[in-house]
Length: 88
Image (cartoon, rainbow, N blue to C red; front, side):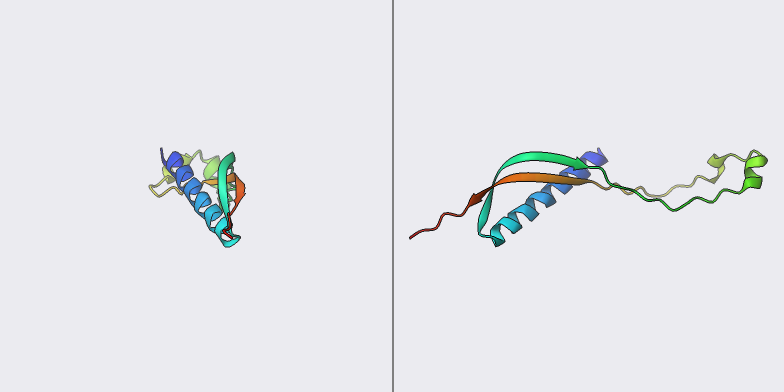
């Protein structure tokens, strides 16, 4: 559910960005042509493991503590572009 919400928010932001860009170029966005979910590259800090603890059979579960999880979502939306009609 959290990932779906993140994707929906990313799509809304992409649509707003497309609208703003088109408007600045005196264009309109048309129909949605393509949607792509972009898989983010997540780089986590290296974990330090003491070799002596592994030799003694200390479980990694003993070091687990509550925290937060960050969910990132990124999408590419491709729209048809329509020219703004000018009146003469």
